[in-house]
Length: 366
Length: 271
Image (cartoon, rainbow over all chains, first blue to last red):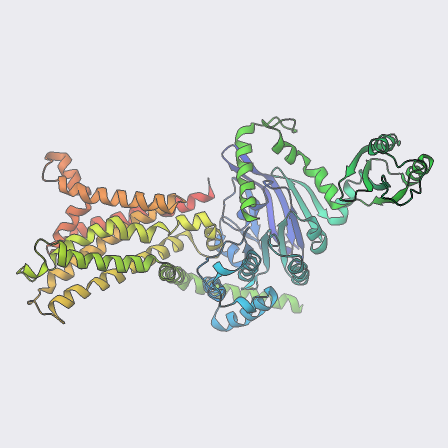
């Protein structure tokens, strides 16, 4: 069974100076798994991937790819991997075909294999139109496709993809995720992303990291079930009329009035106005930690007030909510100068610097 | 069952492939990287600036700059070229062809893709070094146009003694090889091409000009300067002599600088 473990990380840590980018991360990824690696910016996703791909050495802990230690058998590790770094940094002066040729040469693919594989990756990544073009003339989306193509050129058993979809348009994303699902059956894929919908679409399992630690690891359903506390209700109330007759009792209500009434509902934890561009209708979002259905009570309240209810629905727990719950400390830390009320009163200065750097990287990208 | 044999086959296959790559892989990788780099020189302006600029400057040296002009000198010698070329190498050529090597790759992030391919750090350094060296050789071969044009065809200004010319070229090659290693070193420790350029030019220029101090400084300091100076090491070649100690000196500089560059590339892992 142990031969089935393709990616193995045990107590992996990486510090940059006093900043712990990765803090004792342990996980395993088996053959046939497509795993989403999730976390806010600066949570340590890229650093972990760079350790797994032998670009960085861990400060402590071990990592093995297909049984090869990233430190002792680094060449074997890199032979078994296809890796797409963040932002697909390619040689701009080369043409797409030249680049693929270059990557294949360094992987010692012979001409026949290269032809076969190149045809396949060109088809998969949709590069037929741009093969002869210089990479500098390609859009970011196409560059990312080229990056993917070079990661796939040797048909690797393991793929490590750092934000592979960040520059793709929605159609490309859907196609790519489809493809991942296909190849993921016999291969092992670890991909990082901020986009939770993608993880839900393509991955069977998610690992959520925050501040260098793993905060959740499991099947998507498990993770979703794990923090089932917060429930959301969306309520839309008509608050103005434009000439037409108002169907409610008396005058349309003011937002403040509605807010106050909604806050009075038993179990309501927070009530907020959802910004929309609809002038006549105001949409509210009510969250609660209670598991019982609040819709009857909300309906009763609105009818009693004589308001016009245009919409009322309850959201099932979204992965977004789980993600927010699990990683909320990161964002708070970013906003409060000096580390603030985060769980740990950490030495704030160097941490902040590192975070900023990570974010800058991301921003350049967009 | 079927699957397990397939896996075994695959494992065997990989085993043989690995044995194979361990034999040929490294040289191959160095060559593949070197060829890519060389192409990059010609895809950018660098190669043309270096070649065109150097040849043009040499022409000026020959025909305008040399007091009274080249045609008035009665000796069949190329010494003015061998006096001039080190200056061109230190101030422009070597900094230009080495500044991009690693600095640009680090800045743009392409290094990450290159290094996560199955290549060693040494492959990367040596491949890039080889490419810059090839650029130097192309330049030196191009400058052969001058002695040929002047002494063989179309003009025949006298019988040129080719011995000193080859010695001079050999000296320039060694000089350039050491200089390029210095450039690689700077390129490996910064992300800025500009800084790499000026640090390289500055260091090489310094090592070249301190040679001029030798005659004024006596005793131990003078010896140290003579020992370190590229110019005093190169001087015998300029006169047509091959000095073994200079050969060893230039080679040592190249090896040491490349080792430092290698360490500096490796240090990304630990920082």
